[in-house]
Length: 238
Image (cartoon, rainbow, N blue to C red; front, top):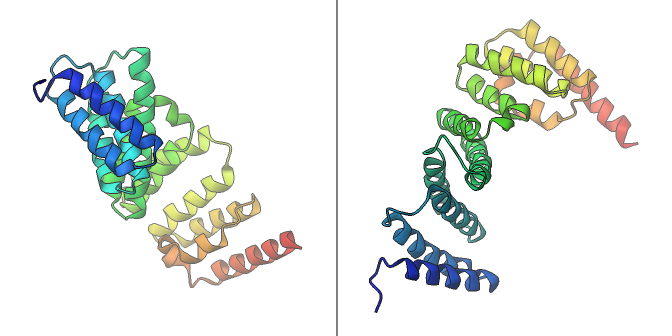
C-alpha cells in the first residue's frame, strides 16, 4: 500500500481525473485533481511549472463544473506560484501567460462586481506575468478601474497610454468622456462623447446606463448626442 503522499498516487489521481473529464463528469474529475494537487503541495521537489500547470488545469475544470469560486481559488494559487520565479523556462513562461489571462479575467469580474481595488490588483498581476498585454487592452481596463475608484491621476496616465498604443480612438474618447464626467467636467466630457460617436462608437445602451455619466445625463447636449446616435443606428439598420 502506498503512503498517502506518494507521488505515484498523484499520477493515478491525474489519470482518473482525465477519464472523468472525457466522460463529462467535471465535479468528480475535480475531486481527483484536488487530491493530486494536495500531494504536490506537500512534495518539496515539485517544480513551479508543474504547480502552475495543475492549478491552471483545475481552474479550467472548476469553471466547466460551474464552481466559479473554486475556480478563482485555484487561479489565485496559480498566480502566486507563477510569480515565484523571475527566471522562467519556456514551459513556465507558457503557463505564466495562461495565468496572466486568468488574472485579467478575474480583474474584469471584480470590475463588473464594482470591486475596483481588487480589479486593479488582478490587472497589475496580469501585467507582471505577461508584459505583452500592455499592447492590448490592459491600459483601457486598468484605466477604467482607476477612474471608477476615483484615482484620477493614475487613470489619466493609463488612458493616455491606451490612446498612444491602440488605434481604437472611439473607445479612447469614450474613456475620456467617463474620466471627465466622473469629475463633473461637462464641457470636456461632452466634447469627447461627440468625438467618440463621430469616430464610430455605437453602444447606445452603454451611454444610457453607465452611471459614470450621471453628471452630464440631464445636459441638453447629452440628450442631443443620444438622439444623433439613435438616428445613426436607425440609418445603419435600413
